[in-house]
Length: 368
Image (tube, one colour):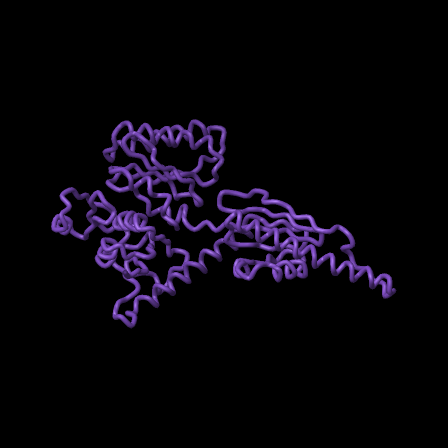
């Protein structure tokens, strides 16, 4: 996950209200239920020590969520009576999560709003293709390409004139496939798509795939559906989940390999809170790997006002010259530091195994 969108959270001091709320389900009493849920969250924040203005701001934001068409809800981050950031979620949280703390509780975003591969589904036939954009937040039309309309059908005759028509059919198919591939490449670039899913007859899918730029070949998935079929949501979700799992496994493989010191005697990866805190202070985190349910994720560390002011012990910050310090979760503190230096973060839950960082926190390092 690119953490740049979290920058507004790091431009202001805490404490912070962090709330993860599911989208309300439409029922006869959904308006009343949503209002009660928003009031309950505000009361919980107040009980944790939040000021009244911030509780009101969060309650109003959650009440507005009832009017939203987003399917999975939102995260709400507020301080000093103002909602600073409220990103949509790509997965519904397991109940409401409410926290009042010195740092915004951003770690759940890695799973609830993290890997969201965007797909362009191309429904291909001999005359052209319809494109559809798919993601966790829904679907929308992404354009249509129309090729030559005649001739597109073979004949069964062996007559010379009919063979001539068949040759023209072949040429029409090839030109249409090239036009579809060109349009699909433009669509991918404009939409920033991570995956291209081709739906249609085997020959048409193959013809289009062969004409796509080489840079896109690894993004292509051919659906096991014939012409005229429409992909169901579960088909797309299966493809998206496989993409996330493969990408996560690849990053874990890099992490495992990097734990072994290189020719210079320095490892390219670190794990465990002390090592990661040191790397964060020195701006050496290249990519942060987090298993949200790992024991180190909620371990206590100490933070100052700046993202690189963090330590395992409070006295360590004083030695470094920081007079003001607060207790914080290790995952939230490390995400703040990673975001400040432009490093991404990744939840490794989709590919849990022997390669998961010890304690649930690890990082690929960069050296200067």
